[in-house]
Length: 293
Image (cartoon, rainbow, N blue to C red; front, side, top):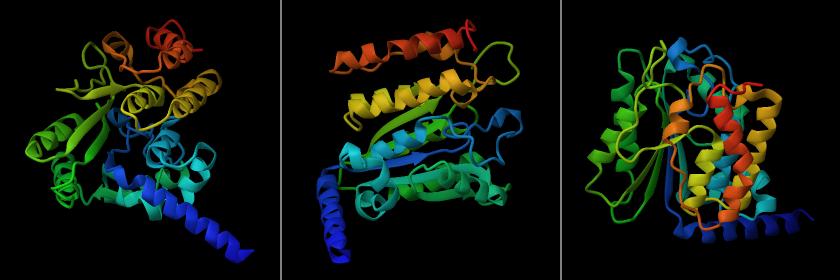
């Protein structure tokens, strides 16, 4: 029986590896206020916690990494063997501006909330600015890539501090390469008005998202995840909206600007948009102040 299980596992690993040969994606993600409810502009009040993720993003990240595995196997296999097989084609990095003195909180957060495993980088000390650290570290990651191959790089951050500026500079620095960048910004702060917590406006072709559903829909439009994946993420978000909305949209998130400016990506399957109608209506009500349950 042990030998049989070994053979089956080998076949699964081999199949995943072969299927992933045509997929060259690098995912570089920030942590605080991007995937973790940290509230950076209010003294990192959520920083010490390791279970305060924005609902649905962990599943979406795994669906991206495990896109070549059948739906029934994805969530379980992704947590076990995927890291040894497809990471030569879909690799995950977490680059956080949090200082190294709290690095264990970041890595424990990723593990505890079941985001895909990846290489984790923290700012080594407070003498180095977040901006300089992130630019240097991301440059180092990208310089290891094969310049002859066409690679898609996802840069995912938020509008709280430095990500918008850092990612814009990275895109410009590597404009001469074959890298195709996709920059996503979690718009959790207002960018104008009287609010004391003012975030930054996105620049260029940076794509905004508010919840995991928005991000999933854009991933689907690019063929990185399936319709079923988007529906799964939507169900997670909607269930939590009705149960504990703070895990989707904390009270400190200001999102009316996102609603006003949001442009839905073009998707071939129009029925998916119909499936998400309730989500968009609920989010619009929450952001406009009509409902906070």
